[in-house]
Length: 179
Image 1 (cartoon, helix red, strand yellow):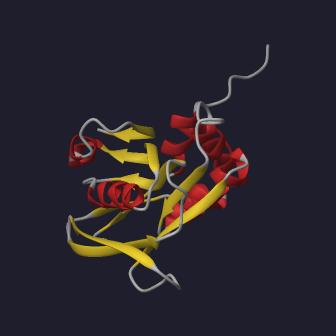
Image 2: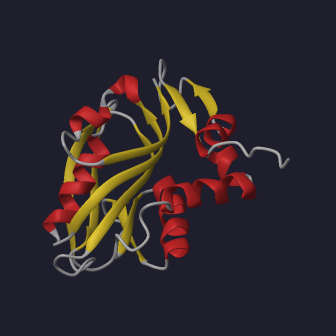
């Protein structure tokens, strides 16, 4: 009998590192860099994100910075293009921006004005769903440039912060949920 492989949820849980008091006192940061350093675990995560999405999307959009790593790998695995959602002032050319509140401040993100063709189906990806501010701003930003956003997928959801609720009826999928 072949050994049972761990689920993608188990792989993510085993690969997370808690970093206390980052980026400010009282915050426990969920760090996925150990997962990114493990090629077997990272491949399992990318495949877990791709499951059920192949043929459903034309592009993957990833939010700076870890969302770039996960999103670009996912786009490659699915054979589609990648759209970077960047911090303000980092993209050349014409951009569209959105400012939003974070749990510890505010931020502005941008995409190229011509990042997607009207109606292209885009999957929005990030490493962590926390309060939902970044995900919601990126979702709305992509819609403003013509995308049909099919969902928000993440590696880890911090359910206790209510990000899924902030995204309302938008489809959200997380590989691992921290209650």
